[in-house]
Image 1 (cartoon, one colour):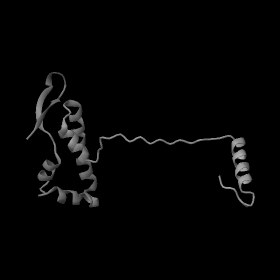
Image 2 (tube, helix red, strand yellow):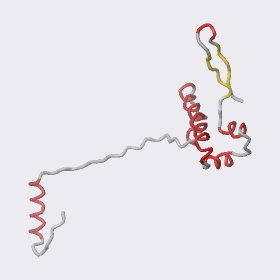
Image 3 (cartoon, rainbow, N blue to C red):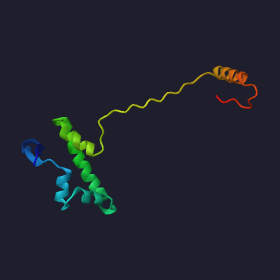
Image 4 (cartoon, rainbow, N blue to C red):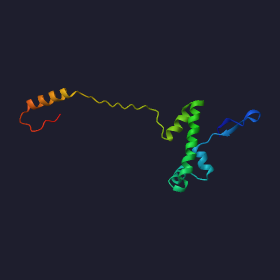
Length: 122
């Protein structure tokens, strides 16, 4: 089981201890489930939903912290399973505004091209 070092306490009582790195599978087994699927099914039950979501978020936080410590593919892979994506999406939204004179010229030109039309659509 992978462990990481953490500092606890302050001043002279501060010490470094090793704690196991939390994982979803470790949480599943600790809670007595035999599969992640059974565990996730409990997330849909209102009486367990908050607790399970909070535990998953704490584990997600751990993986996020591992990115800043040592990076690597492991934390990235785990975070993708939490719904993270590693691509950037750019949305461009452009609005073109023309003056009223331009619009009137366009409407007049369209009407001149088809004088029988009752309506002109721009």
